[in-house]
Length: 196
Length: 267
Image (cartoon, rainbow over all chains, first blue to last red; front, side):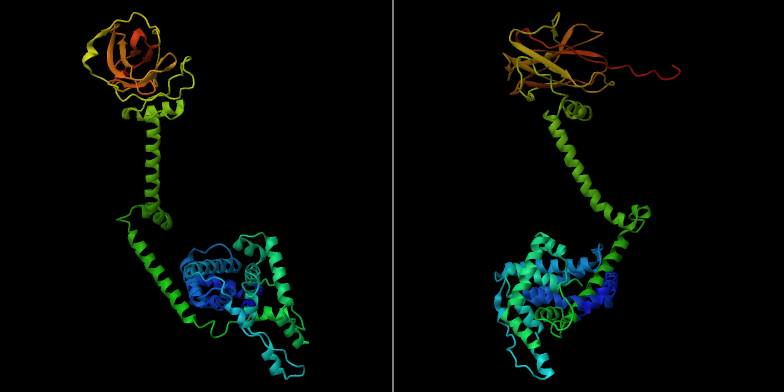
């Protein structure tokens, strides 16, 4: 599992956040390592053009305002980070008028393989992160963003609802439909067939 | 981590998708780590510099407030104090303007008159005449002429108050007792046939206990809504005022008492 896995116990990243607030570089780096990849993937899913630039701007704002972030723990911080990222992405899209670019959907997905391949081949056939992001980005805009915020960002339903100005029920429905669409996707079925 | 992931072999396609989406960052994704750390260091140094400058600004000799206020409060104080002061000035100016134009309710107008009388703020609205209901507050005449005037020495011979033929005159004074030397503002309205009488010449007459004859102390012209406002000279003794309109109409009396100052002890 990822670095975020360590936060299941609510310790490592929580402590990193506390240390980062007090100016500790190691704490900040731990926080950044855990969240930066997910921020990039989220920005890719919502169709942001300049993912790296937007992520950099997001972190700059986070760094600037971190001393004033006093309420809540890592969950609130994560919601804050992705909210800032979303706003910066919208700003960038407004300036470029090219929001929701679907170019990522052309990311190649592995072709079916015949059973009995060596283990190495099977590993290679597993979904890469880029391909997974491309599959989520191919969903409708609402579903893609909900799936990204729930799965990639790890936000709970209420936080996503607040962020997208939707009801929690609408978020649950969008997530359910998005995951069902993904499970019905022939490329996902191919992966399942390979696994079997 | 709160993801809709269901662990357990064999891993389905959705599980693989979730695993891929939540995998650790690769080298490309973590490429800007150094830049992020540099930004973090720069922000920390900037914050430290600002903190130092803030502390220097709070040197006790230059800012005695910092001696007894907590640092955060002392930092907050000048900016917020300036903003609060500006807001208070605006509010007071707005109240004074509203009082000056008699837009305030009666009791509030009286209170404003008490505070802003030197600025010429009139007292409460005169009671609406029964013949002119619903006319709203009377406008203030801009032709009032307080204090000394050529006719102030004239004696107005009015044996007893009465209403005029077509005019109804009301006169109000916000304060019934004032200390010596205080200016009193008198307001009121003149109606003719139940409608505000604009542009009508009026005279404020007064008499004291020492001089029982009525004397004109000010003259003026009513405003577009029949209103008028007079500001008396500083009063030194109790006075009774009336307002005189054309056709021999005049208002009821308004008495303003000026109590004598207490005698010094031992005299």
